[in-house]
Amino acid sequence: MVLSSSLIVQSCGIYSFTGTTLSPDIKTVTVNNFVLATAGGPANLPLTFNEKLKEYYQRYTNLKVVPANGDILLEGNITGYELQAVAPTAQDQAGVNRLQITVLARFYNNKDETKNFEQSFSFYQDFPQGQTLSQNESRLVPKILDQIVLDIFNKTAADW
Image (cartoon, rainbow, N blue to C red):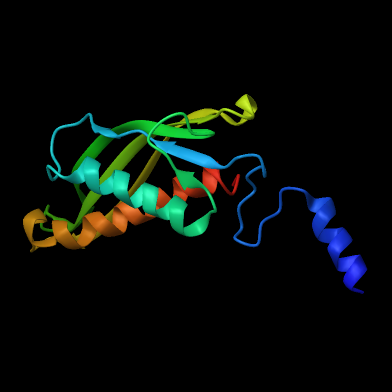
């Protein structure tokens, strides 16, 4: 039974118990600074996003984060920071406000160029109409960035 299970795990090649499908020859990741390419948003938004992305790779893979020449490379721009009124009411007002952040990510796999891509990732959080963005920004931005980081990770490391 032990022999059978070891053969199954070996035959899968790039399976990982953390859910990643990265090739075993990928050992390092470089995350170049994502830059703010839109108006609005907190001044520390790019720094916060970069740190969340690096931390996620360190926590959920065995990859070493290196400042340059990683086996895989992530870079891009924060292209959207938008406040939108949604759910109109009978009084011609928005029932809910929505904060949406969009990130354009470029991914380069130096071991397998067929995995390279450029894609926008976006997520939002809603808050009540009677509240301002400044009342909610510090609570909503981390949740939005966490989801975008997860989506980018799933696309790059889990191949979803």
